[in-house]
Image (tube, rainbow, N blue to C red; front, side, top):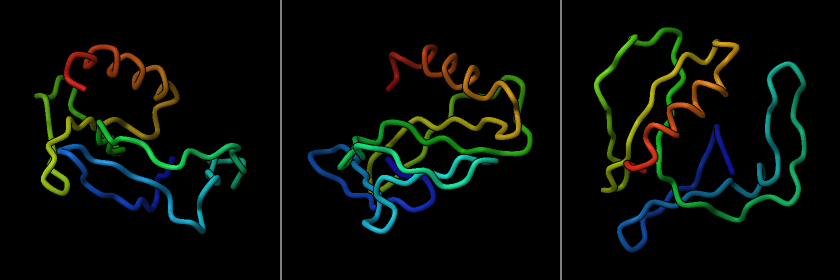
Length: 99
């Protein structure tokens, strides 16, 4: 949907986001460059905040953050881990009841 810049709004107690027009349908793939993704999603409900950090706690307490008055679960993962997609998938499966 979007990563570097996101247009965010609240509606009916939920948070939504979309990419700015200039970035709609584009995604940067590290080591590859900017690629076109078709068809782009017009908008999505935001249900999780993911922060990438150079280091993370081994067993952190559950985190949350508030954006535009909507409280969302928050994950902090190491963005340099080669198995980041696997870690994110596992974390999402474990959090399924929260998001």
